Structures are given as C-alpha cells and as structure tokens.
Length: 282
Ligand code: NAD
Image 1 (tube, helix red, strand yellow):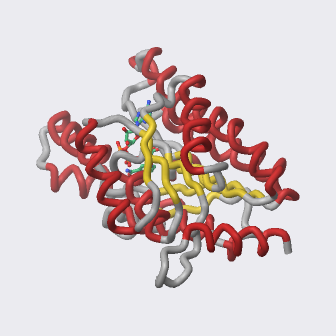
Image 2 (image 1 turned 90 degrees about the vertical axis):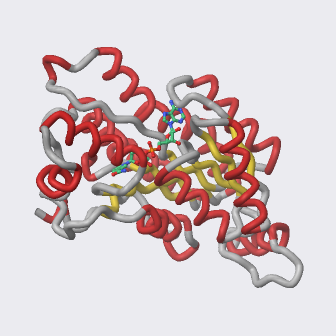
C-alpha cells in the first residue's frame, strides 16, 4: 500500500502535461559507467520511462553534454552527469550526494561501470588486478552502501548490478574479471537478503558478449594478436560459446534492467539473470 502511494505521488511529480504516465516518472536513477555502451543504453531506457538520470563515466566533456542534452530533449526528464572515478570510494559518495542534491533521493542504482584485462595469471599485472577489483567489484559495494539506507527508509528501491556470464562461469586469461564478476553475483545475493523486507530489490544481469566499444576493442586486439580477420576472430573466439551466434544488443540488456526495476518485479530479488544467447545453458 505504501509502495503504491509513493509511486503515485512521485509519478505525478515527474509527468509532463498532456503526456501519459510513465513507469519511472519521478524516480531518480544513477547509472555508473553510462557515457558509453551498455550503461548508456540503460540510462536511455530508464529516461524513456520517465526517470531522472545521473550519468557517470569517462569521456570528452562536450560529447557527454551532448548525450545529456539529447536525453533531456527526447524524454523530457532531468539528466545530469558526475565524473566520479569508480576506483575512488570518496568520489562515489560525492556522486550519490550530488544526485540527491540535484534530483532527490536515489530510487534506482545501476552498477554498470567495468573494465577488462586479458592475460595469463603469471603475466597478469598486479596493478590491473587491483583496478579491475576496484572498479568492477568494490565500486558496487561503495555505491550500494551510499544508497541502501535511504532506499530502506523510504521502503522502495532497485539495485541492479551488471555482472556478466563471467559471473557464473570462468574463462582462461580473465582471472581478475571473472573473480570480480563472481564477487558481484555474491554481493547481489547479500544485498537482496538484507533489503528484502524493506521493499528494496537487488539483482544482477549477466550479459554474454554484447556489441559495445569495450568488445569492439577486444575484437580488434584479438584479431591482431592471432593474425586473424575481425570476422574470423568474432566467429572462432567470441561467439564460439554463445549459441545464438550473434552479439547481444545493448537494448536487450537494457530491457532486462527495465524489467528488474519495474513494479512487476517487486518479488524478484537476489537473482542473476543471463542475457547471453544461451551461453550459460551449456
Ligand atoms: P564500455 O567500455 O562501452 O563502457 C564502460 C563504461 O564505464 C564507460 O562509460 C566508461 O567511461 C566507464 N568507466 C570505465 N572505468 C570507469 C571508472 N573508473 N569510473 C567510472 N566510469 C568508468 O563497456 P560495456 O561493454 O558497455 O560494459 C559495461 C558493463 O557491462 C561492464 O561492467 C562490463 O563488464 C559488463 N559486460 C559487458 C559485456 C559486453 O560484451 N560488452 C558482457 C558482459 C558484461
């Protein structure tokens, strides 16, 4: 009842005159790592459904402002940006404080920022290990820690962690990434258990290969390393394990996140939802 009352009043606050109510009108969302790829797709999907969104990530300042302006004018929602480095706990706290000051308390947190490095364990640079654990795993803790108390107090919240198929299975040469993403899946369960009776859900989405700048860079690098064309490396290396034999689309990951943030997913918590063309069904 309380949840229904809250969504009704917040919806009224965010709705544009003459426009039908949208699912996330009046909600405030932070999406980390949303200047590119999957995060940007998620930010756009949430904005399209009425949420005020705070973008985060690296990139050219003018290009980021262009993205903000495009989302504002396309969807009529407040859109902001914070440059927090997800490797820095203090900057993550600043980002949450900034979102709250600009738009109001955070209702939806999507922990998406991530980096990758591929090397055999004995050649894996320790600094890369530390960076991957910090950005892909510890940042999820720091951001969740900063929003969870408020969500529980207001008795509504959605935390969605973008893990990976590599949160469920391993692959050689991706030690830090696989460790971090398995950690995210575990932390998702703990967050879900602690928050469940407060109307707050926490779930992980586990994409297989999705066509984004991160993957485009890996395809080019692997093609050069193996002396293969990009088409060959795509077929033989990247999509060999993905039964759909195609890259997932950013919009397919965003659709999973949108569902998990919806009212209808109120009893779905602690899960890891593969969006991987059947990869982890093996
Ligand atoms: P991407 O490289 O296109 O985007 C990554 C985003 O994170 C960018 O906005 C970048 O600026 C930001 N970022 C990187 N380091 C950061 C830092 N220290 N602080 C703040 N922001 C930072 O990557 P993507 O493919 O869209 O990946 C997004 C997420 O999805 C990652 O967590 C990744 O592990 C996960 N994922 C991707 C795939 C895939 O195939 N693309 C598959 C499974 C999981």
